[in-house]
Image 1: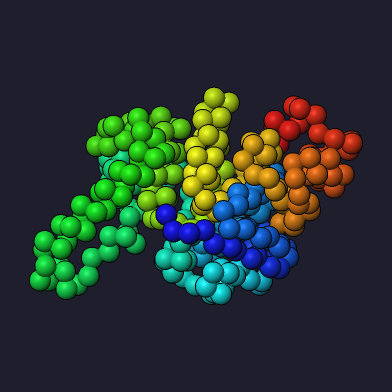
Image 2: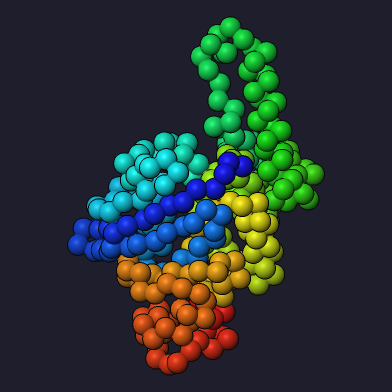
Amino acid sequence: MHGPGNLEISNLTKSFGGVRALTGVDLRIGAGETLGVVGPNGSGKTTLFNVLTGVIPADGGSAVWVQEGVDLLKLRPWQIFEKGIARTFQNIRLSPGQSVLENVLVGCHLTARTTWWSVFGGLPQVKCRDVAARERAMQALEFVARDIAATPHRLAGELSYADRRRVEFARAIASAPKLLLLDEPTAGMNPRETAEIADDIRKISEKGLSILVIEHKMKFVASLAARIAVLNFGRKIAEGSYEDVRSDPVVLASYLGRKGDHLSQSDATRA
C-alpha cells in the first residue's frame, strides 16, 4: 500500500433540485486515521462519497488531497482513483459470474497497466504484468480473507454475503490506496457478520491506511474510529468521540428523534 494521506473537506455543498443533500460540510481525515461518519438514511452520507469520488459533481466547497495540494472536486473519477482513493459500495458491486480472483484483479488496474508498446512489440512484458497483477490480487485476498483465497477461482456469486463484502475489500486494497472509503460495509448483515467485518476493517487500519467509514450504526463505527462526525439532513451536527456525540442534545433530538441526556445501550446498537 502507498503511504496514507490527509484529506481536508471544506464547505462541501450539493443539491438535487431544491433539496440540499449536503450543506457546508467540513471534515478532516488525518494520515492513518479511521474517521466515522454516521447518520440516518437520507442524511447525505452516500452523497458525500459520490462527490468525493467524482461520481456526481459538487455545487461548492473543496476536498483538498493535502499530499499533492490538489482539489479532488476538480478531478475526474479515474484521476481520483489514481491519486489513491478507493471505495466500496453500500450495495456490493461484484461480477457474480466471474471468479473471486477476476473480481479482485479489477483493483490492480493502476499497478498492472499495459502500454501500447508492450502490446505491439513485447508480449513477454504483458505476461509479466499479468503475473504481477495476479500476485498482487492474491496478496490482497490472503490479507483480507485467507479462507476465500484458498479457492480464488470460485465464482463470486457462490459466496455468502459477508464473504462477497470481503472480496470487495480485497479489490479495493489491491489498488494500493492511500485512503479507503467504506460505504455502510455491514448493511444487511447479522451481528456475527458485523463483528467479523469490524475485525477485517481494524486489520486493514493497522497497516496505516487512512479510512473513512460511513454507517448508521453508531456503536459499530465507535468500535473502529476514535472520532465520529454526525450528519443529519446534509449538515454536520456534531463531531468528537463516541461519548461526546452519543450525549450531544442535538444528536439526540435530530439523529434519534428523541430527547434525553444520553443514548441507552439499545439506542447505541441501533445507531
